[in-house]
Length: 124
Image (cartoon, rainbow, N blue to C red; front, side):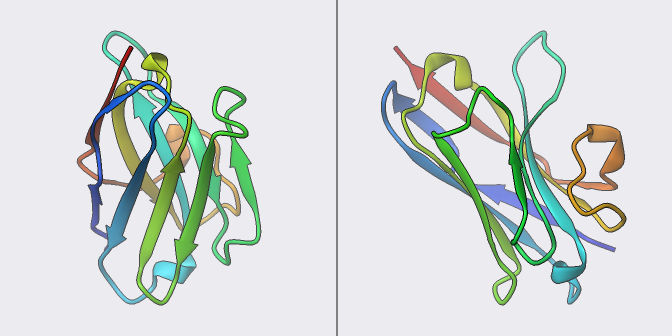
């Protein structure tokens, strides 16, 4: 069983930065690929970034490439999302998720565990 808890969301002006963290309970964090997703009001949940178990592989949505960086610290059971050059269209609830099966899962249905989400609001 895995429990995920996001933190680090908030209100920021366009062009600013935030770093999201997702703490994972349990002793097998390194067995899970991790992903960050976001969901804006009235829109479907979409992948932001995913990272493999070792951290050696990553994948990003085109809309965040060059601005966001996903990373993980397996010793601290934590995955991060560094968000720079934020835009109003990045406003959403951000969720972290874990998958024990695939190396770089891209779809929400491929993830078995989810956090509660953290709100990110970018003002113009």
